[in-house]
View 1 (cartoon, rainbow, N blue to C red):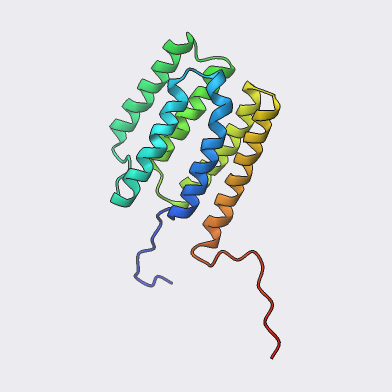
View 2 (view 1 turned 90 degrees about the vertical axis):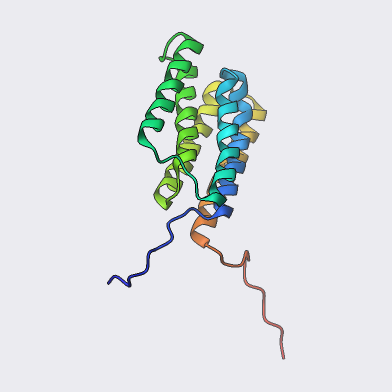
Length: 168
């Protein structure tokens, strides 16, 4: 039954903040294995998303998306000399995440970004297998799960468990 009201499909700000926090913890393992502009691009797009979101802006123009993605793929090719390999592949995933952050505005796209965040956690282990990377990735993994919980929780009060009622 259609009530006539248009549903608000925007991504709530709090889950988006948790997602951004997770991506910030994914970045340290990526800085050592990738060319510097790729993680910086992710940082810039996260910042741009928080500037654009309150104003209602997002990347909607399809030709602009195609041009930006093509430019990023060409830049990755020139940075690594190929598109094959671990580093160029992870760079492509980071660029995909950057573009998705700029255009995302629905629940489905938020879920896609969380799943892509988990793929980036795995990619962090591809590039480096030390203890510091493991700590960053585990924190990022936890923050991604928290973002999903927060997304489904909505604007409910942040209570872990209900407090007992006082006896009369």
